[in-house]
Length: 169
Length: 457
Image (cartoon, rainbow over all chains, first blue to last red; front, side, top):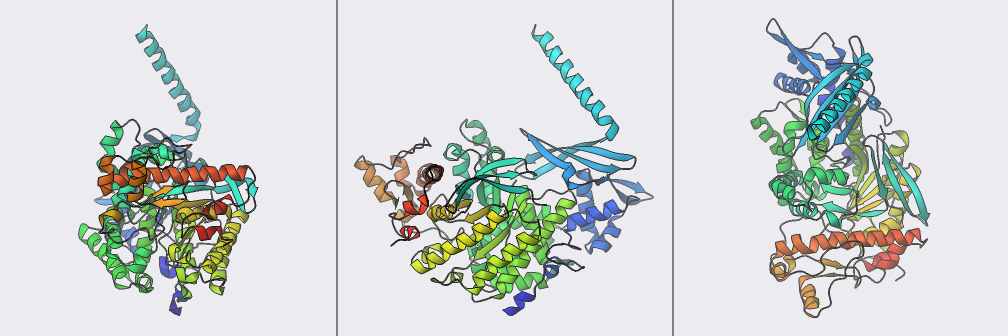
């Protein structure tokens, strides 16, 4: 079957642009493409808009957008009966994202471009056998507040320890 | 982005001992090991209840087609595992052992029912995560399309043409399938992934290029997801060879092409974190000395590429032959707990009760023992050897000797994992002492078909 030689990466993935062995231009996974479109449109997108660009059904686009909302990658608002989805900042660089596991708790820290400057996203994740790793919730901290927040946590932790010591004595 | 780097600490001949530094997953673990391959539900049960037969932190290979069966077993056992102070839950196991997910080629190539059943369960289980937004009916249709294509195009490449040329609700089947592969590995907490790729067959030379492009496609998808901040495993360049690619004393142009494409992939991109190789029908290859010599050259060629690019080379399902792999510079060689070197997912086991017990490795006698030998030796007080590094039971009890599942789960599989790890540690000690090719030296007087891998016949 010599025709196998003619099956290209674009054929396999449906990329539109030229692909050479060193650059994966125009190659997108569906979820990452939706996320990219979302991040390129800070003024918001609808499920229909995303569906048209990606070439998937509106229901599927909505499900992916909702999943991104659950993961705190996006948030949604209803404007005159139309649901708009907005990005929760854009990851600055993949190097600036890391997960660490503390027993059963998994925290992912990542730096995003926020509206007023860089923000730190702290995600809490949990692993379950039924659903795999899942986002439980997340908070955003502006860059200038990170140190203050860390000190605040230390202060509260210290207060807790003292409280416990007093309780014991 | 390549996050894996292989650092070599000791070299003796071609063999090397070192460690993997994985900067993304914040992992560090040793190389130069035989590693267990978890094929399905029974194997994961053995692993979770017997963590002491593993080397601490050693990586493990896991079958992606059987992902749903493995996870279901882990769910069923979860409460018992939590109560057992010696056991590990699946989550704890993944903390202790970095996992590589792989997809053995025989499932698509042979289209056998059992493999497809396993696959269908796993497709249904994980496709809701890789392709959200499909209704239950659509998921049924999508799984049906893929499984039927695999059942229909046996021993040809029709499956690959079909998934490339057909779409489901506007999305190419090949892309949906690859996204499923990546998501399944992520959901199972696998840090590393070898793809669901076409087998490379000498009768279809175009399969070499097809496999290379499938590898590039996976790597591109993984990179795209990584760039978007989504979780992905690190992808290994995948090579799955039909046994007809290995001819007696004949380094064919096709083998050169396989090696050449692998080298070019690692040279031109940073998208691959290692090389993963599987070869079908090693038992048949072992019957012809010339084919074994060709395999040894293949070890040398591919291991050298890994060495040059500081990436690990992982040889899948090589059983005891893994010792020869390590001698020739491989970093990991996986073995199944039943000590077979046949396909990972075969049809239902043997009907004869005696064969259902499987085999157990005697590292001193250099034989694989059947139940009757184990029983006979027990009666004569000449048992399987006690292992230096692992405190595992070397004598089956009466109940186990009567029940194949009990014998496998409670005795032979845990013992085999411990015995293979014992061999692995002995091999490492020999290398530390500067011994050349200790693995092949050991195999030289092993029972057939493994003795041929020591050569010098």
